[in-house]
Image (tube, rainbow, N blue to C red):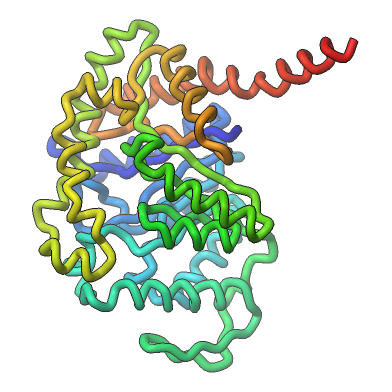
Length: 363
């Protein structure tokens, strides 16, 4: 099992944007030193309490020379707001600048972005689908052409040329069609943070069934905000402000969202469901008890991961968010270190323990 870190880079009052970027840079370098497999940052626009990360790729390019082995992952490139051929060129460039350590996802983006970006709601779904088609044509072929509603391309190519290795591509979200697409194409799935397994069980079943039908192996990444201390009560006390802020930050753009009718018509029904508002209002103890966030001792977090692994076939990676809701930098560093020292070894040693058990049984 892989272990990685996921950040939304939520920007809360009391800390400058410059300081937040500097702190996250230190967290990435620290994560590389501790042996995490990847550091993922969301690509998001316009809503600072949700994120101030409009271009993770440029951030990663700055950090690549300061790290040795960690992969850099954009979660996700929001395709309706990119020219897909230019984005494909940037990914090809990242393959060079990041020395083969780049991973990325693609998606529509959240339902509150279109009006801020000047994209009509009625265009988003079709624009996303056409952009995805053109993006992968450009990224996977030496020459390509395309004729659609939004783009017309004749015998083009990208520079630098497309990567030669097979790229690990992610999708994420809540719609059935996303999970069907991922299973058909062999993409990885990143489960949105804050949602317990039951909330997406049906979609994950679609993914696993579609993977099986097309000869692909499921590749599921589980994301949860996490904070730990050797003392459970200390952990709960120290994490409360950050965890509350994390949920509030995720729901904060809803104050400026479009009408429910517009959201439904554009295929963004999830944002009209009230689920995010309910999550933001969850009492703190219920966040922990309900598996919305992981807060407690290392043993508590190991137990949560074991429970998730038992029910989620195809789970290959656990990603923790260590800087939720404007939490202090030292707390993020502390959790990264405790997780690497006290949680990761439990699962990395599991294959060895299993092999010893098999060997003993054979004697």
